[in-house]
Amino acid sequence: MSYEQMARLEVLNAVNNISSLEDLNELKSLLAHFFANKAQNAIDAMWDEGKIDEQTIEDWGKEHMRTEYRHASHRS
Image 1 (cartoon, rainbow, N blue to C red):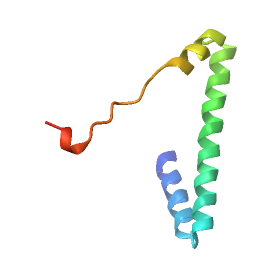
Image 2 (cartoon, rainbow, N blue to C red):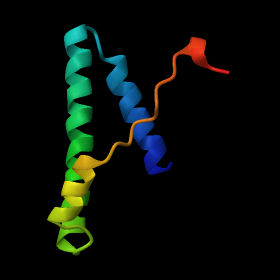
Image 3 (cartoon, rainbow, N blue to C red):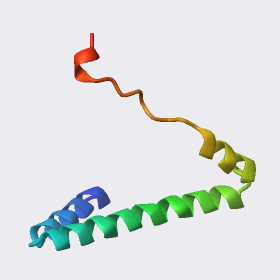
């Protein structure tokens, strides 16, 4: 069994035990913190390896990466 398959089983097991909106919000928060921590660790590693610097982070803060929103009535 792959790690991905094992992770799916763990998540399904967790979801099966959700019995309230409070539980759902707690699970969502835990997942958000998990992925935020993974992202922070990756950024820290890039910093330590010299792949990014303060200017890179400043540039990221100025980027506009959203896809333009187009209302359904304006689609061709």
